[in-house]
Image (tube, rainbow, N blue to C red; front, side, top):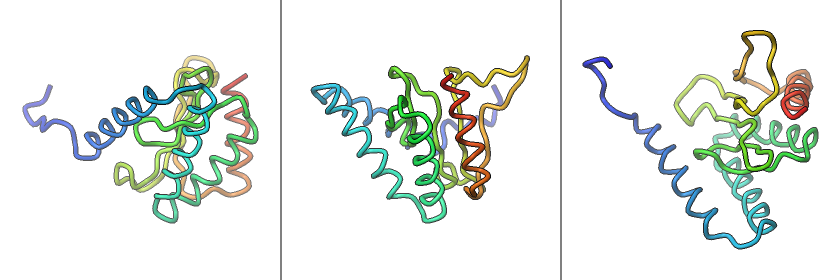
Length: 146
């Protein structure tokens, strides 16, 4: 480890606090249907809070994912909209503002079936969600859950 290590950034600490709050909320919910409905509301509320450019992209990503993979359930993951299969995160949207990045990110976990040889992309930078990008996201998500 470098002598310059300063600990977690404020953004990383905030993401960890978000995750702890998500876990506490989930533990308090009663039925599976109640949890799913509240998770969906939480994701939509998180998207609504985003800055305009991130919000527009997140809304489109959410629409594509929920349309092409209805088996994926929306939920918050470290304060980000994410989509899970059988409780395990498959993909997530990270706004540019989350870590003060110049682009948003669509990321996939090791649960996603994107394997292509010995090396493949697990995250994609997004600066705009066009019709072409929507089609590519749809194809990636379908492959991820196949």
